[in-house]
Length: 391
Image (tube, rainbow, N blue to C red; front, side):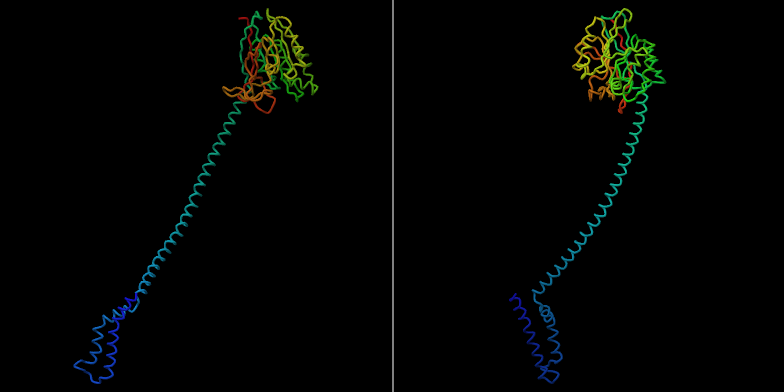
């Protein structure tokens, strides 16, 4: 920097000397010309001749460092301005993005909500429709009587013996005075009509439906009636006279009792066992041992509880036992079968059909009605028809 300054001073020094000389000439010379040179010209010519130099020196009067500083300042200002513009753009861009982000999701959410509402509404309508259709179909099914036929071979019978079995009606009626049920049973030409209990409802003192039905069935064939838990509970806790009323109209009602009937040349011992598995040993075993040991007749056992064949009486040589109580599992699914039965729980093993357990042969009828709040679903009321023959 000092060298640069010295160079500028050397250039400016001659100019300063010339200016002094001009001043001296003005003072000393009164004539218009000195040595043939016009004073005015002398004043002007050196100035004109030296104008470029003077301009150059004047331009160089500003120090180089200041020029550099000015340049850096202008660059900095430009950079600052660019930065400001960039910052403004950055500030503006998020605002635009925000508006887009806010608007777009709202539209998407609204569309999603509309679609979701429509799907929910359609699903609800379809479900309601299916429920209504299913309920109507199930109601129709629950008022149809489905026959199930079984054939059983035994060398204890000579002629064919047909037993028609029903259970668990729970005061349900099929037509006025159960005319449809009576006609169905009659159409099967039974030799014995077996009823495996629970035809009444424990809490309902009016069991006239049962009496009317049994009286009409008794005109078709001998009716044998084994008590279920609803009859027993009504007798024990409600002072029901159902046992005596049934007996009075000619029904063979069996409360731990046995009766022998002849069908052609065949003799059938009909044994009514009242007790459930928990009560059997205390109240039923003595009677049952005696009934099963007497004679070689065909043993037809009517017991309401299929659970008696799960560790209680299956070892007895029972030719045929007819049970109810399980209501076919209430809700029946294809392949799976019954879903629930009292005293057995979910997926009951003994809720319908034919079973051979140890020395016993058992048929569990699905029943005709229901007693609880759970409806019968896909579970038509059943009449079981059993043909017993020697071949």
